[in-house]
Each structure stands twice: as C-alpha cells, then as structure tokens.
Image: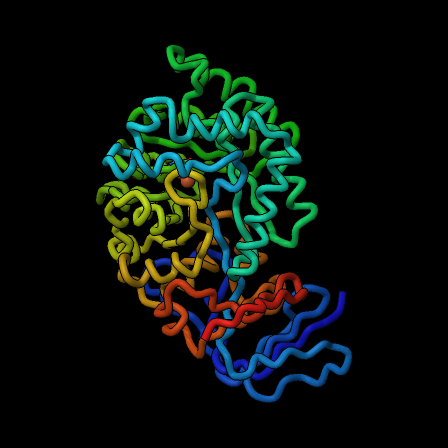
Length: 415
Ligand code: NIG
Ligand code: FE
C-alpha cells in the first residue's frame, strides 16, 4: 500500500480521542491551520502544522488550503433491503401515519416481502450502489442492520450480504442483527412465538456464524414493548451481541430508560425522549444516536439534542438510510440539520458525525478522528472551514475522500 502525504490543508478540524465525547467536550474539536497528514500503510502516522515531514516515497496531495476532517461515520443504516417504498408517498400525502401504514401490513412489512424475494447476491449488489454513493458523499465507515427478513434464514441472508460487502467494498461496515424490527405476518397472532424464535433460534444462529456485533430492537407502540425489548437485548448480550435500541421514535414507551438499564452502546432516534430517558442514558453511558433526516421525512419534531449535550450524553448523528422513514444516505444533509434543527454548533456536529458515531459502533479506537494510530480515513472538502460545510445545503461538497490511504475523487465540483 502506497503512503500518502496530504499537504497545504487550510483548516484541519477533528475531535480527539478513542471514546465518545459528551457535554462541553462534544464541541471541543482540535483545529489546525496550514496543516498536513501523513498516512503510511493505510494508517495515520503523523498530523501537524507548518512544514510537512520529508517523505520522498509518499504520494502528495495538495489540499489547496481547503478544509479537512475525518471521514464521516454513519452509525445507523438499514442498508440491506429489496425494493423501495415510493408507493407510500400517496398515503403520506393523505396524512396516514407511519405506524398505521405498518399496522395495515405495509411499511416495514412490504419491504420484508421484497427482501425475502431477493437473493443474497441481489441484495448485496443493490446495497453496493448505496455504499458507492455514501463514499462519494464523504462517509468512510457505516453500520448496517438486518431486519427485513424476520425469519432465521432470511435474517442470515441479509447479514451474509453485509459480510460479503465488508470483504469487497472499501467502506468499513459494522453489522447489527435486527430481527426484532417488526412482528412478521406469520406471527401476527403469536407475539410470544416470535420472541421465542428470536431468543432461542435467531440470536444463537447469528452469534454462531459471528455475523453481527450488535443486536437492535424497535421498541415502539405496536412493535415491541420495553419488557419484550429487554428480554431480546438481554438474550443478545448472553450471546455476545452488544445492545442497541430504536427508542422514543414516535411514542416514549420506555426505550431510552431501558437503553441505560441494559447498558446499550447507543439509543437511536430519541425524537420524543423524556427527561428520565436522558438521565438514564447519562447513567448507563449510552450514546444518543440522533437521526434528523428521519424527523424531516416523517414530518416529526426533532430530538432534544441540546438537552442531551447539557446532560453530558454524547450525541452522534446518522442517516437512518432505509426505504421507509428515511430514503436518504447523505450525511452532509444530516450535518445541516444538526445545526438548523438541533441547534448544535458546527464543532458539536463534527464530533457527532465522526468520533461519537464511531463510539456508537465500538470503533472509536480505529476511526473517527485524525490522530496517529487511527485509520487513514479523511475528507478534503470544497469548503474553507466547518461553518461553510454546515451552511451549504444540497450540494456534494466533497473534493476527495481518502479511505485507508486510498483516494476517491469527486468529479463534480461544488462551487
Ligand atoms: O429507523 N423505525 C424503525 N426502523 C426504521 C424504518 C424502517 C422502515 O420504515 O423500513 C427507522 O426509522
Ligand atoms: Fe432505524
């Protein structure tokens, strides 16, 4: 692997460290001017200001005085699915709520049908296109959930597609088992039966094949109760799967409190998170993984991000890319919304989409900041500083993505 020296960086902005940053530290990013980054064998070996080191063998890239940040970390996606759900737009326009569409057998359940009908190879080929687009938009690490199979073989098929992509695509991908995404049609009258299947067959099978690091549950009205979610997450823990939870997306039924109690690495959405949930997450050391593009898409309110920062809960932000509630994989839009709707500062937003995202998927020791020892993942932006990156909206401001020391240029220049 060739070495790379990025020079003439006007502003280098990065959070620092190997763990999530909350409270005042959320916005305490390191800013260097006239900076350089040296990447050797895919790993950062030096970051500094002023004259770059003499490294004759390294390929040089001139950042032209632009902004450089760590590669973005998208810590919450439902990457693997068949079909799309554009047919739901008419229902949305008639005002039919998200959970009503699901209760009528549509929503997630219609994607389950399309996903079951696809082969592992077809699912991987479709997701590969999304990964290419994500990389071109500045995302260098992501998480991917199963959850549109809802039976053992179908869930394994989704997770194997993730494994195949991890082995063949430059993106780093963390896998999450989310068999508890909805109650499948076959178990409509037998909730207990499906939860037994999850706990007795699916989780053990996922663990045996080492297909996922995390276990996630949709804790929501009409989906899984807090008690059911607890049982599933505790079972996952016994099999080595780290808990995550979709909590307080539409109704606050105890998901964020549960996140703290089971020691979830992250709680997701938290749109209607109550004070007790914020306190519970602070106590449990849970990262709040907020998904503002979903709020926008559902026409919902926005999570109380400032209250979370005030309470010392580290805030991450991710896309939630999925075919229903958020068919958007653009983390640059997520950053805009972080400022405009969460009222986070550009520095707090940067930490949310890099180091705290990495912490939400247990990868903060490898990615999420520009420091010696971390992976050589960075973005050169068509921006002079962080405020410009958060201010422009709807363009792709990526100039060059560096992933593991390899470069990917954006040929359409934003201006
Ligand atoms: O995070 N809320 C549950 N899961 C996804 C939506 C999945 C879908 O609608 O297909 C979410 O919003
Ligand atoms: Fe989600």
